[in-house]
Image (cartoon, rainbow, N blue to C red; front, side, top):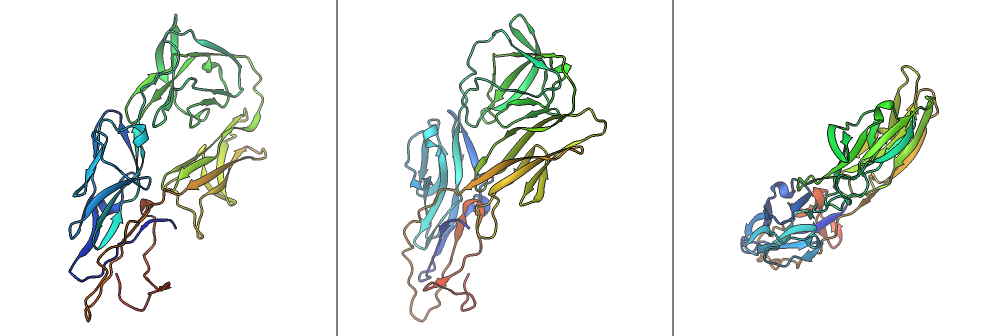
Length: 378
């Protein structure tokens, strides 16, 4: 288990109370990632209580955040982080609100603040003549969305079907994924097998889901599908790639197989296996909020996607998942109020937090030995 902060300790000699965070509720951000729109302002609220009144600071990737006008600002007495219009990609990172008084220190889980940016367009000019692509019936074809502009977060790619009058594209309908048309994560559109209906004009469209900016690719592709032989074709892997995610995020694994069958009633199925057990079905496998591997569990490692078609031998492909830990937090100074009057009860408080609240119950230690069963503590 990976704890990013331990500990808030107090010895009661003046009725002090170590800080406790009330906002975000439960000391857990609603979403671990927040995109900041270019040129706009925003606020991230952090509120805590304690006695004496706590002081606030923010860190980014473990280093102190410095107040910069119209970029990132906060005060010691108010934990709200103000994001200004000059927040840039270089300011993006893993932020945490740290709260401290004489009796202890506590922090929020990490919140990834990322500057969203999508000001560029596809390369090329509108009214570009269509690119003609000659293909055969029943074969597989992967149609790539070319010349994509940079974008944070990456553009979400969709496809359109239309007609060309001269060099002008007129939209007819959007392409909907089906058992024959599948998109891989970068937007490439796979025709698992081609039909005569695919002899049309296509173009890709990119949307930044945060800024709401949509850009059109001026490059249009005209598919010409010619006569082919409709022989049965066993599954063949066309896309699979290893995946790396940070602990606490969702992992999306993808396998795309092409195939073709004329046999009535014959079905196609993709199973996902982990340690010889089926853990999912379909082109994609989603693992929500993956955990940091420890000695009791690990979601990291090798997954198998297995394609089944009729009585044919299954076809397998591998996808490896790597899970990275969040940045380490460097603890602040220990509390200054650690003494207790003679002949008085001493009460020590413990607070801890971890990335996306992934933690176990705290255990007190005396000289390296656990205190369980020897005294009352909370």
